[in-house]
Length: 65
Image 1: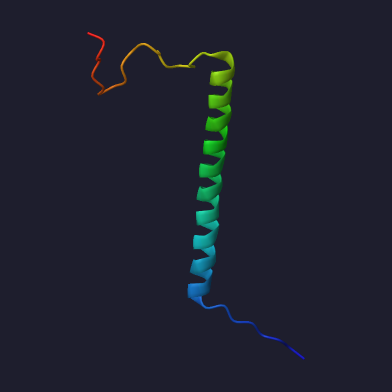
Image 2: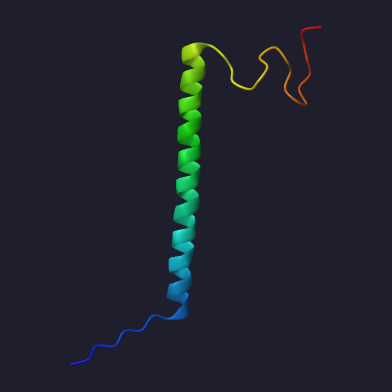
């Protein structure tokens, strides 16, 4: 007894789309996870890494003067 299966092209495209969406979702998850770890250590040690704390951000008006 032989069993034949059929997968139409739409099913294959759906599988590729799900795999691509899962990969992008994993990347965003890990990015937010590592940012959270970085914020934890910034609060723990009281230093901002790579950012001048007293300088205004680009496009932001300095209200000190």
